[in-house]
Amino acid sequence: MLVQKLLSVAEVTGQGVLYLLLALSVLSIGIIIERFVWFQRRKVNAGELARRLVIQLRKGDRQAARAVLAGSNSLEAQVLLEALDALDDGSESFVEQLQAAMKEHRAEPESGLLFLGTLGNNAPFVGLFGTVLGIVTAFKELASASASGMANVMGGIAEALVATAVGILVAIPAVVAYNIFQKKAFAVEDNISTIGNHVLALAKAEKPAKQKAA
Image (cartoon, rainbow, N blue to C red; front, side, top):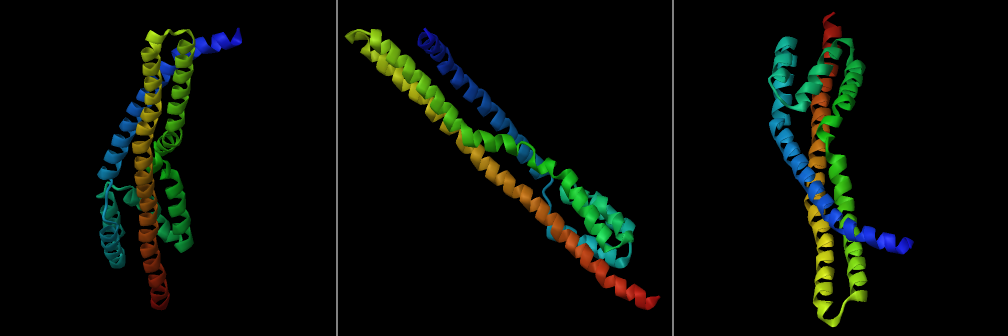
């Protein structure tokens, strides 16, 4: 009795898996496009930004330094802008504020990556599940099929195998996009740390000079 009910569920669920994979594929493509646009809009030459920032800080023009950061749409500039005023309280305060700002904004470059990573790892298994259900349904038909109905049964098995192929097809772009965007997210953090180190080095170099002048 239970087996019969499960077989009935398998007939319906097999097609449902394909629709699920289709929906997940659409979501994946949407996230990939959104992430690509997000990173493109915030793309920055970190070396050039650091050079311009250090020039203004070396001049002692904090307002111009803030203008350099405010003029950039990058996440690096936004984080550094939030931490810049902490320089007045010393190097340690600047480092702590920079790290705090990085943690607050970390979710922005990593948005959607959890979904892409999970989909990339599990879509083939979802497709395989659909294939198993399809084959179960095909063998059920095989048990009651005549010799003339064998072609339909074999066709059903072939259709069931499509679910595995679709699962792999959905997983591949998700995995590739996940790796690319994760690397870009790491690059953003590296840029922030590098520019922050430039600012910190300048602040430490200027401190003895100010003490001598005093």
